[in-house]
Image 1: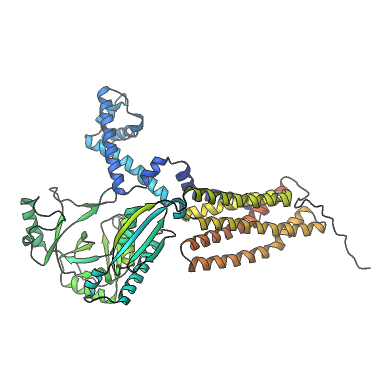
Image 2 (image 1 turned 90 degrees about the vertical axis):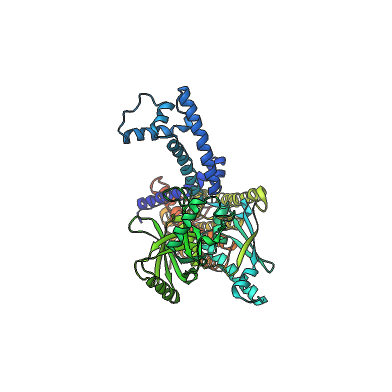
Amino acid sequence: MNKRYRFLIVLLVIGVCFLFLWPTLRWYFIVPRDQQTMALETRQQIRTYASQTAQADLQRLIEAARAGDAVPADLEFLTAAAKKLYRSNKQTPPEAWNARAVLEAFPSRREALESIETKYRDDIFALKDLHRNAVKLGLDLSGGLSIVLQANFNSLQERLGRSLNEDDRIDAMNRGLEVLNSRIDRFGLTEPVIRRQGSDQIYVEIPGTADPERINDIIMGKGSLAFHLEDSEATEAFYNYYRANPTTTFDASGRLINPAIVPADVIVLGYYVKDKYGLDEQARNFDGTPRYVALKREVGLDGNYIEEAIVERNNMDGRPEVIFRLNSEGGDIFYRLTSSNLDRNLAIVLDERVRSIATIRAAIRDRGSISGFGTEEAENIALVLRTAALPVELEVASQQSIGASLGEDTIRQGLYALLGGIAAVLIFMLVFYRTAGINAIVAQLFNFYIMFSILSALNFTLTLPAIAGFILTIGMATDANVLIFERMKEEMRLGKSRKAIIEAGFSKAFWAIMDSNITTFIAAMFLSLLGSGPIRGFAVTLSIGVFSSVFTALFVSRLIFDFGTDVLGSKNISVTWLRIQSEPARGIN
C-alpha cells in the first residue's frame, strides 16, 4: 500500500480513537467532582436538587431586578432565553438587558422558574449520558452496589397451591439466578457477581457507580404485565364519589376505604405517565384531579404468554412503543378477548399501574403494542418481558453502596503494575535494540491508546484482571517487534540495503506473528464465552489487544521505518549494539 495512504489511515485511526476516548477523558479529567456526584444521584434526588436550586436562583434574579442590577453571571443563559421570547412575540427589545428586563420577558414567574429548572435538568442528564459512555472502574477499584435478595417461598407456595419440597426450592433459586443473570447481562451491566448465598438468598454485586433506581427496576421488576377490560360505568361511579370525598376515598396504602363504591369484580388503579425526569407521575384529568381507571378484576390476558418484546418507533409521532408477540395459546386467548369486546377499552397494567388504554377496534391474535412512555422505560419494559417473571418473589434483605475491596491502595498498586510493566518492556526494547527500540516504544504507546479507546467505546468496566490483560497484551505486542527485529538482523548479515532489510524483516516475521496472535485470540474467545465476571473482563481486554498489537506491529511500525528511509533519507538501520559482520558471498568453484 502507498505510504501516503497508510499515513492517512493512521491519522484516521487516531481521530476515531480520540472520539471514542473523549467521553472518558472528559468525565475523569474535566467534569468537576461535585458535578460528577450530582450526575450519579437518583432521578428523584436530581429533581429535588434542580427544583430547589431553581427557586433559589429565581429569588436572586428577583432581588437583582428590584435593585436594578445586572443579571447574575451564572444566570446569563436567561438573557438568551429572554431575547428569544422577545423575537417570537415580535416585541421591541429593551436597550439594556439587566435583571429587570430579563425577568419581564417571561409571561410569569412560573415560566422563568421552569426555564431555570430545565437548564439544570438538561445539564445533569447530559452528564449522566457522558458517564454512561465512559470507561467505569470495577468493584475492586471503585466499589459499587451490593444487594442481598431474600426468596419469599411462601408466595410461591400459595401460587402453586401445595407445600414445597427441597427440589422445588432448589429449582426456584436456580431459575431465579438464571433470570437475574439474563436481565443484568442484557442491560449491559458489565462483570456482575451473582451467586447463591445459603439456601434462600442471592448475593449480587454490581461494579462501578450504579444507579440504585435502575438496578432495582432490573432486579426487582416482576414483569407483571396484564390486560384488563375497563368498566366505564364503574369508572363514572367512582369519580362521582371521589369528587365528593377526595380526602376519604383512599387509605395511606392507596386502597379504597369503602370498597362498595365499585362492584366487587372491579379494581381501581391509577393511570401513570413519565414526568420530565423520567419518574412515574400520576396523570391528571382536565379538572386537575388524579386520573384513575376502574378495571375488571379478572385478568383478560397474562403477560407470561408474551414470547418476544422489542422497542420500535411509532410511524405517526416517532414515539417509542413496545411491540410484543404472543405464543399460540396466548394468541387464542387474546383473540377471544378482543373479538368478544369490540369497542370496549382495554387497559395495559404493569406492576399494578395503568400504562395505556386503547379501544378495541378489531380482533387481535398474536401481536400487539404498548405505548405511553420514554425510550429508556420502553427498553426496560421490553427487557423484563423478554426475561419473563421471576419464578420466586425476591425481597431486598439489604442494599448498600460499598467501597473498593482494597481501596485506593488497590488502584495505586494496579496503576504501578501497569505503568511499571510497560516501562520495563519499553526500557528493555530501547536498551537492547537501540534506535529500533524507539520505533517499538512509539508503536506500543499507540497500541495502548487504541486499546483504551476501544474499551471506552464499549463502555467497558475496568477491573484488576482487565489491567492484567493490558500488561499481557503489551508483552505480546513487544514479542512481535522482537520477531521483526531479529529477522532484520539476519538480513543485515547478508549485507542488504536498509529498504531490503525492512522489507524482508517484516515479510518473514509476518506469519509467525499472525500464528501466535490467532491462537491467543482463539483462547481469549473461549475465555469470553465460557467464563464470567473478571475472567470475561480479562478475555475482552486480551482480544482487543490482539487486534491492536497486530495493527501497530505490522502497520504502524512499518510506516515509521519507511518514514525514516524515504523522508529522512536514512541509509543504515540500528537494531543492536553489536557490530554485525556481513557474511561473504558463497560461490561454486
